[in-house]
Length: 288
Image 1 (cartoon, one colour):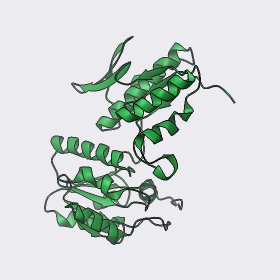
Image 2 (cartoon, rainbow, N blue to C red):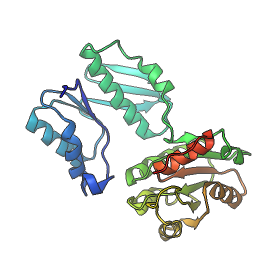
Image 3 (cartoon, rainbow, N blue to C red):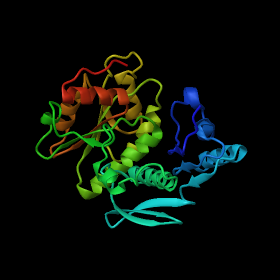
Image 4 (cartoon, one colour):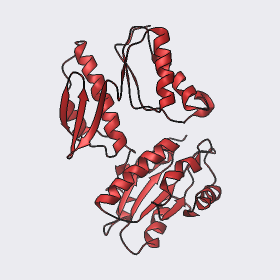
């Protein structure tokens, strides 16, 4: 087996618990399986218990770590991304991907590139170009073209994110909050989720932020949550939720529910996000 030049562990949260473990610590120990003796690993921002588990695994096998908050960090300052480590201070453009969590992701990627550069692997990366040109479909992606987007006009907005776990919900809600500060609009959710996902945990960060929710089926899978039951979960959390026949119907219902321009977010499942993108781009979606 080839020896990696570097390992990277991105932020860890509860997800895929049926395979990875029921706690953040258990999941962190599973993720730490990528660590190799003598191979440096860049560790992104982590919950305390996850970082402790990773550090314990690293010490046991002799893997050196570069840790967020100890060896490097990144933050937004005056509309720029500041990356700081013991060796350098970089003043960079903000990433094209919006949201505070993308500042963390960018900082982690920069730390990784700096270590690879120090190892003499390839030419020095063009960090600025990477930040401004990065594209990640279904990660707070503004939909402005295609048949569904054409239904949304007169100042309303349509967004798409495949986030589906509590940490994803928190990141999305924080980003929506940032958008609200810049350009206030009522927020509506189009929500579809798989049976294996924690709907209440995902929705918790949206209470007080979202006005209306429409729950939708996910075509091509029997593993999707029932739309009526999912709407019930949202209603029990104080969100005005109803089931809808499909994404287009949900979008039209949310538009009709407000007298002013609205910000609509389709979310809750990567399967659903893939189907929406396929519809927008006129291609056949893969069945799940």
